[in-house]
Amino acid sequence: MDRKECRPFKEKLLAHRSRVNDYLQARTSRAASESSGNANQGIGRNVIPPAASERDDDARIDLLETESRVLNQIERALERVEDGVYGHCQQCGRRISKTRLRAVPYAENCMRCASQRREAR
Image (cartoon, rainbow, N blue to C red; front, side, top):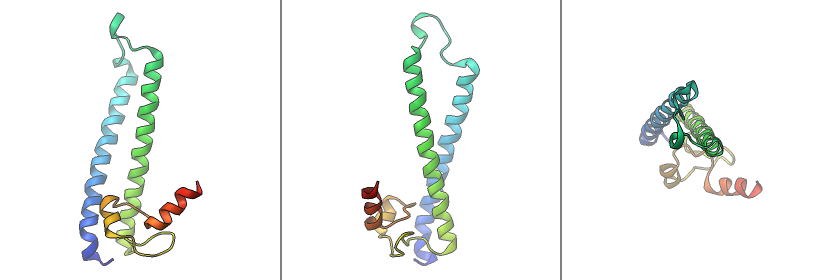
């Protein structure tokens, strides 16, 4: 894919990176303020049961890990744009369909290779 064809995908990747960064920063600062003792203070009904709080913490951690992985994938896709190999499957070298790239602009593999990887798990 030439640079002109990559331009809309690069713009989409940059916008997505910005949103993910903003989300991660907001969650990190919120988690820091909660861990400093500002959260779950109070008496009676305002106190969250420990089990529920732990489940919420686990869910937040899982979400942060997922978003961090997505951010990493976006960064690698932007590197591929700069290297001139964006839009080619990292496994087989074939072109990744534009439909797939529109849906998942940081896709590293074509649908065929991605399906094979999922089946192998």
